[in-house]
Length: 276
Image (cartoon, rainbow, N blue to C red; front, side, top):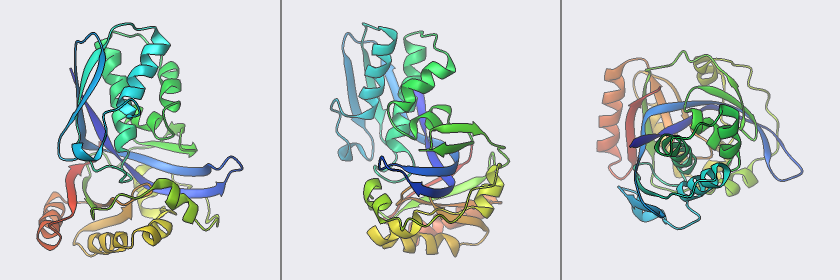
């Protein structure tokens, strides 16, 4: 059995306040690409994880890995005694703002529910996901959805960008999410009123772009590059960075931008995809 851990994008990310517990109150619009990491499973007496792929060297397969944590959490909740041999094809860069670890954990939950023939309600599975991280519930659904609170209070959003061509680039730096949030200036710049994907992309913002750029100035170069490409409707950083994305109306413009990126910045990671 196989499952895709779809790359997550924050079409908009508004930081409203820093809470006393150290977390931040957010308003965001999640969207997901058609591509991402790939997870597969086979029968085994033990719970095991093997990591392969372009970014395998950047990730340890120990018990702290979110894939194994998700599998173990599911075993505990459902009193599962059997194991599973999990294989992660790590295609997305680590610590890059596109939900790699969270998406992997969510894909693990979806995959093992099928593999172990579990009958869990959506609220039950959401609770398991929420215990693994703030972005995991949204990644569990992997559909356009609005997130509030820490990003794990989800509500429906109109998906009027399904199929839109998108180009993701990462300038080759891993950015610490805690460092970026610590650099946020504490200014509430207003709510995210948009309830559709297109409105969030066009009218929203990412309040973490400035603090992330202070941590990794090359993010500004990635944004400037995408903004200068022909046919871009919006270019923005996702999450806490450093991955940035550009949406296009036309496939040909996205392909031209991807080709330009390969030639101008051969050391950057890129992914040409579509929104789900």
